[in-house]
Length: 171
Image (tube, rainbow, N blue to C red; front, top):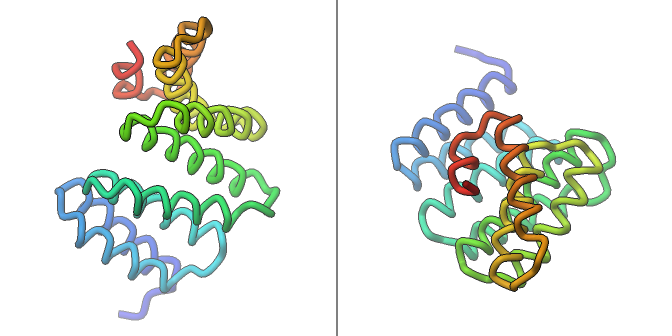
């Protein structure tokens, strides 16, 4: 059947999400690549890149995940609309979380601080919660006195956005 491109894009994205949740990571990446054929705007591309980056983290491909997140930030660096800024903040907080998983404290701290600033500027609550969580972790690792303050802030924000996994990670 002939479907509009936007419907095909959404279907491929949903298939990618299901495959990702089922642990079929290469198949998820293939579905996201197929979805990319049906949306060529920078925001649409960035959304798919961030999904691909998440799959790559689950596959343990941290460097590839960071490259995808960096592409999101570069793709949207000149965009000023709220959706683009929100995606940029999410990509920054994602990169901070990856640095945390790599146990790269200083890099995680630096990216978390950038993500916090971007998330506050565009009111991206989930990105802010994640970035504050990484900021707290990095602060503890570096012996900074404000680590508890950031942990409390992250916990409050995880409650607001309803992210139980994030809450558990900070608690």
